[in-house]
Amino acid sequence: MRIYIVLLCNELRGRSARISFRLPIIRFLACWQRLCSSTAKNAVVCPLQEVGSNRMAVSKHPYPLKNDSAAVARPLSSPYGHASGATTTITVARPMTNVADLSGLARLQFWAGEVLGLLFVALSSIYIFVVPVSWTRQSLAEGVMRRVVKRVVDIIGSLIGLVITSPLWVVLPILIKLDSRGPVFYTQTRIGENRRRGDRRLQSERRVRCHRTRERRREDYLGKPFKLIKFRTMVADAESASGPVWAKRNDPRITRVGRILRKTRLDEIPQFINVLKGDMSLVGPRPERPAFVKDLSGKIDNYTARLQVKPGLTGLAQVENGYDSSLDSVVRKVRFDLKYIGEWSLWVDLKILCRTVLVVLTGRGAC
Image (tube, rainbow, N blue to C red):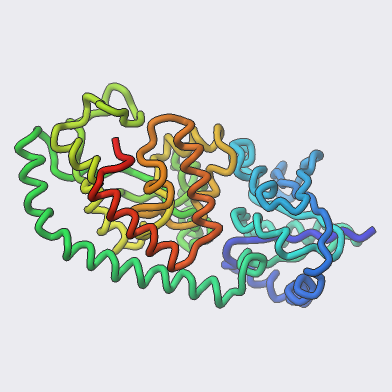
């Protein structure tokens, strides 16, 4: 029996990726999947674990897909998949695999440099293909257009937001300074979209990887770290003793002005700058701190799937769920985030922005 192995990568960049992608057998795959999409078969997904410089070991316990795309995302979303250094995900399927059945693999990535090694160790009865994930979810042109449209809306919307809120940039700093000692702005490292592994900057970063700590390497794997800007709502050095913890209702660390800012979400206004810089989008899953991402990715299924899009200034989870205060609230938030990612459209973004205005005016859902 012939086995077809489909390797999906986020972006085909680098020398080895270009060589592999030009193979005639890989060019044939797109047509093959379209022709066979009408006759779906059950498939299994096996995460690969690196065991040597040129050797790969396949998990002995494949995960059945059974037309459930979420089942594909679980193996590499698990902390085991990240901690073991799994760099490749494969789908082993009989011929006639439905394209829709592979949609969940769009969340997964691998190092393109491993492709040639896999081709070298492949058996004669195994066929290996390499395709961008956009071919399994949508056409390449559609994926590019989606990013362009969303980025244009982000730039225009953030500029309009900065103009509308310009008086607050004068009033709020004065109130914050009068209320408590400390800086006006508060910056914090958050984890952004998981596109760093396909970035060409990694070619130079690999040379200095030995100088990085294990935590920093993990941050780079989960997503691109960036500095988030907010108006300060807590006393200075609020987490110096407790470490990273969620803010609770009636939290004594929150200042009087900060309580009002958090209730009306006005503390998020400086993040229009993050949107202009391209670190964030107007609408998307809220970015989390590295410590929280590391902890929650091991407790909540598909938590890291939120990182496949840019984090947002607001999102469906924020207008429905409010601030995080417990693990249960985070689980609900992840469900809303994944729903947004799966149902994204420009109209959905506009509706969420309108609902955010109502949240700001009413203070509903905030601590």
